[in-house]
Length: 292
Image (tube, rainbow, N blue to C red; front, side, top):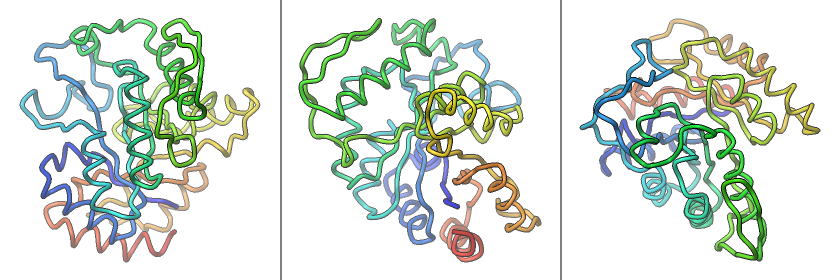
């Protein structure tokens, strides 16, 4: 079992705090840290945030939310083993050429420690502010994934789609393995099916207000129907019974996730405060090193 810390860049938006956190996470044996994404924060919105009971984004428009890729680049520079994942970057809001270049550069310079978690977005007002159509965002995302993978895999690449078309172009550097793992985020059946069709992983947010465990089977069934090995799609999930203050047996909680097919457990980093180093170190000794 692998263990990951979530909400890295918005919990630690300052450089000193972020460096302190990732170094403690690496020392404790965590596999990776997740950084979240919003380009802008609309002051007036009616869209419902699906990961909080009140349907509202936590914090507010004045809260610091560093760009996840820049934050990850800074953190990769002060670590050697820790991996970093966007969780999730709102793919249809990004230019796929620019994003492919940024992610490949980051992966190359970090020695292959990057994963691209993507989502189709829920905040319509953010799309409106950036001038991107909210409609067809799922189809646009699928096409952007295909574009980025083609640019990563080969030189002189060509592509013809509904949203993107190009002929014989190259984008370098390439990622370490000529690909970056793409993890599909979301709590819907559509997201689970997308993960089964084209994802390297599936990450339903740990704050989803619905039971996401049935989606794991949707991922596996869709992968099999698409001619893919269902085991090639990594399943990620939260585990509240492992958080500080829980009295549950860690072994039982982890075994339950294993039976569900989960191979990576995601935990909110802010739950380890205020004694961050002590909390992460204790978790490393009592959980990570006992259950890897």
